[in-house]
Each structure stands twice: as C-alpha cells, then as structure tokens.
Image 1: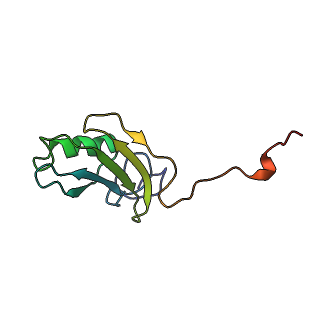
Image 2: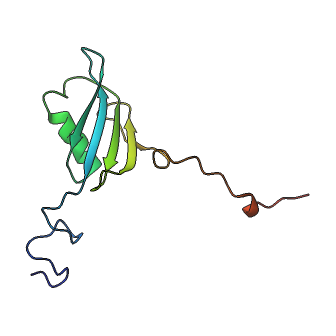
Image 3: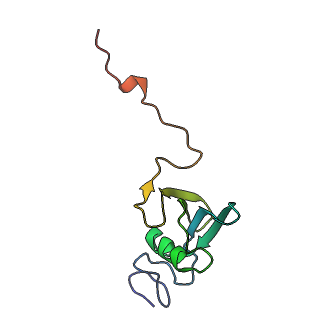
Length: 115
C-alpha cells in the first residue's frame, strides 16, 4: 500500500490514480487526401504532442499533409480542450474557451465610465 495515496499497487504518474484507471484521450480530426473526406482518430496518450506523434507514425494517417484539429476528452467523455494545427508538423494553437461556451463579455458594473 502506498502511504501517500492510500492506494494498493502502482499509480499513474504523480496524480494518485490507479494505473488501470482511464485518463481520457485525444481525438484528432483530419482530411483524407485521396477521397477528400473528413476522418478522425482517437489516441490514448498522456499529452497532446504524444498523440500527434502517434498520429504521424501510423501507416493509415501518414504520408500526406493535412490541417489537424485536436480535442482533449477527460475520463468521463467531456470535451475539455481544443487545439488546431495548419499541418502535421506545425505549432499547435489553443482555441479560446470550451466548446459550446458563449463568448464572455465584460460585466458593465466593472467598467468605469468617464463623463
């Protein structure tokens, strides 16, 4: 038994969760070049860049350049983060806010009006 976490056996990194627990994953959307259709692949890796590296090494998803949209899903299937990339080796850009969340406007009470 681990005295720090109180769990039996190994834990997943330093998060204190058991290694057998599902930690979510990354869904990558891309365009298939031959038929031109939208495709998706799901990768259960620890980081977004590891998911993209795994995507690049698979035979079915390598050999062509395509813009990517990467979405992070947590343990319960909730969409938590979104990134976009112009190509498979481009720098990822985080999208603002969560999907479905409306644009947040400043509260008028917090603005100072000068007259």
